[in-house]
Amino acid sequence: KGEEGKGGGGGGGGAGGRVASIHSEIHQHEFFISLIKLATFKYIVLAKKKVAMLRRKGHEASISKASTPTLFQAIEILYHDSLKPVIDKILTGVSMKATLGSDEVLLLFHENLDNLAAAFCSYAESAEGSKVFDPNIDPDQTDDTPHGMVDIKQFMNFATDADFLGSVSESDDENEANISCDTEITLKDLRQVFSASQHDTATNDAEIKLMEEGDLDSHQEQMVFAEFLEAVARLGVIRYVGRDWTHVKCIRKAISKACSIKKGKHD
Image (cartoon, rainbow, N blue to C red; front, side, top):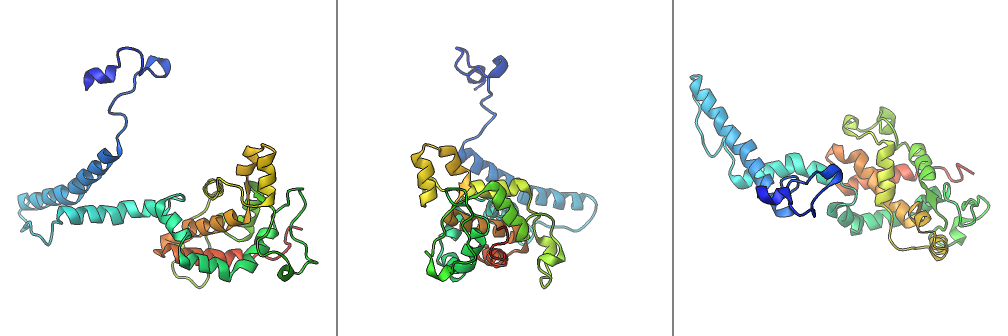
């Protein structure tokens, strides 16, 4: 291994002539082995050491199945205490994607589609740059899928107006006892949500026009209605997952806040 790390023929040299060490990264299976070793040390080895220390100090202490978890239990504790909270906040993770595609969340979107569309249209612009929302048009007489797109600045305006952005206070939800568990959403979080909600394929006329013109960068810098719905859901998970709520309950709360936006607010 030591010889491999030296990388003799010049293929492994990095910036400044440095050679990457073979110990500087681990593969997936090594990562899982590390988790097993970490769980063993944290919840079994340290527990036994604590018992031994108590014995040396003259205390009565015994190692029993009740006081020391099995390896399986130790891994389970590590997952629930340390891994799951992180996994739940990964905006592009498997858990989030499964939630977004679940019947419960799709039904939530469907039940609130008109209000969510009105919120989106308050900020969206058409392909020609004009505002999508027209207060003189009855939304019931138009297509059920709004056209136009929202850029990052407009999305930040929406998040601010819907009270997603910034510190958490009682005004966020005065009837909830666990407000202190809510996460403060930052501008960095908003940019990550915006990016995570982007689709690879164009889904409306405005995006298709950008793609046809070869403006691929702008396609990824604009958000259509379907992407906006995903972004609202992700904002909810970031904001409320600390309450020990399910993803669905977090998204329900976020949809409620998004629907509170007044039509035409930025006209």
